[in-house]
Image (cartoon, rainbow, N blue to C red; front, side, top):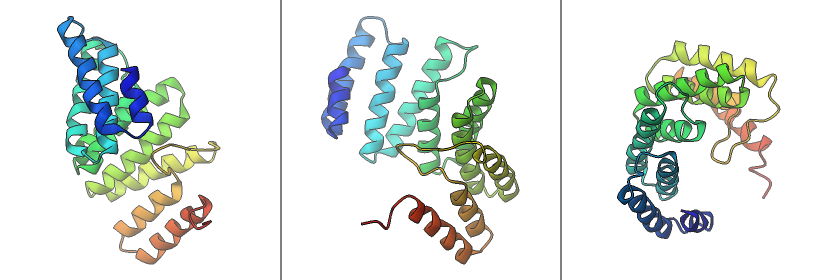
Length: 198
């Protein structure tokens, strides 16, 4: 597993997949196929699939991880990383109902844990999923909750997404037929993140 992680860190995702497969096979052969350690390796396998653009396989693999984690502790919360990676993969695959369910779960767990970072990430994704479902009213309400959180959060920095209230405002503007406002908002976010600085 560590070797596969090292390969993935170097961008050698195809090679990492083969090693992750070997690691998971060892867990399975030794009767540890339902353990947390095996689920972590499977999660990392799915992340490499995402980097390779194999989103359908990644979505199914991450769903299997969530099922395993749920069985291992039916009364506990699901870990944030597999939750958000699955929800993003589902959103990418236009399975907006599943994405909305798991983004909402991430946000509600974070509220219980008083973790505004994960609450915000969950709300941001939930608003996107609601827009994909055509629920403009729900997306506006979720975006308003995200805006209130953003007033107290210094950064939503993430390695995989620019989580900025103006992005949600732009998506809502596009869904309302206001492309000029959406364009202006996205340009503001790009400038704020240094996109035009060479």
